[in-house]
Image 1 (cartoon, protein in one colour):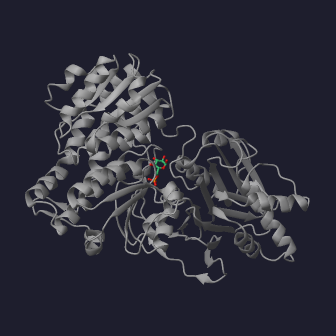
Image 2 (cartoon, rainbow, N blue to C red; image 1 turned 90 degrees about the horizontal axis):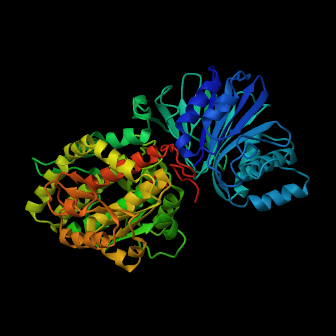
Image 3 (tube, rainbow, N blue to C red; image 1 turned 180 degrees about the horizontal axis):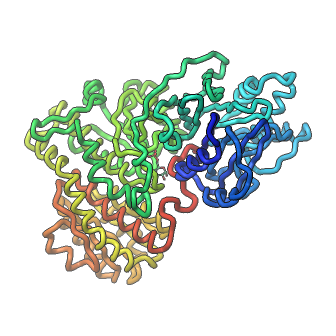
Length: 613
Ligand code: G6P
């Protein structure tokens, strides 16, 4: 939530920052702004709305500067407006700050500052933090800004990644992080700072991921890293494994559709080097190295949010079926605040695309303190969740930029399926025949996804037909029940149409009251154990004149007759069918959203990486 960029070096800072903000817009787009410094003079520009509006505002303005910071906001404290946009300036006008996160005790600090005569121009917690820092520096005999920042951070609670610039130190950016991500790119005589590596990748591949409670003092040719106790830390430099093309649209209208169409290759990349169906093997070092713990677990807890939580629900079905280990799936936000029973040695699987979701991160830290073993299934390489996990497996879907998660979800399901198969094989809870059969099925998935995508136009036509509906119901059973939830979530996010996902049988206990001739009901009705049951559920909707859109298996001659519209997918074992059934639902939400003229990559009020609770 909120994207931050900084630059110090010989280049013009503004173009670097502007491009970086556009790449980080998925993190929030309520307002944006830059603070540019030239010869020790600070200029701050900010504007409500998307980065393009800031860009327009700055046409013809003096943006000459070799150092600067920029921010794209997802509003927490204070409505989206010009005055609440970052950067914020201090009372003296000497300092400027950008911030990603929430200062939870800002009200108390604000009160103290108000008593001292400070006034505020915004409603934000960030402006409070900045004046607090300036006040500490003033009362500390005008000691160093770094020292004042350290003292301030010891008093604040909450999460932050902040960048600070000071007119009195015209080449330095001071950064600090706790709970919100920060990457520093190391160039030749220049440094780049950002919430993720996407603004940095075209300039350098050498980066340092800053850890919680660390401060960075960044000059063009010097990077000093310290902990909050003022001890110097040697920066650990890693090489980015990411190409520029991966974060560009590559001819597609939106990142979302590009990412949907990338799935044959992202799933293939996820399987590559791991699954060898001919040899009957799955190679996953994180699983192998911890196999005793995993296969002997008395239960597994899965912790996630949003779409990743839906992947966890599918995994519950798969792991219980194949490994015979009880699984509980938890919303991270609920888990972290109740008093969950977590014992030493308990196995927790964390699922996260970004690896930065605040609720998931804190829930894991809590479980880790209690001695749990954390296995992270993460997409963003080097992210916080990947780093705090004891072991894990990357989904290898590449950067996901569209706010609605698509390719990360199918990557998560692929990893979870392989993981369950591997544990089941080691545990002896699966027959060899079923194991080999599922390996072959998984190997064929990229090709099947490809064949579904070839018929995307059919889904576009269905979307056109229903785009004006005010509600949708998504129904599925068994492995496809979580897919119904995911289909509904996708539609809500991208088209602003109210949608509910339900287990098909459960709809008789409430949602059926919504059914009339205007309600589109999407059935995931592929050929599986539940097929006959779901056909009965379709009859029940039909009898009440609901409109039926069904996702069915090729060759099924029963369901087409019950459907107003249907879409066929290739046959697949029910256990891995969700990787296929979700694709038409992703397409449906995309086409409905675009037909309604919505900016599907940046739907209102959402952000891709939710780094506040
Ligand atoms: C946000 C995103 C969702 C995502 C969820 C969890 O709500 O918009 O697409 O599923 O966060 O994020 P994570 O990065 O932890 O998977």
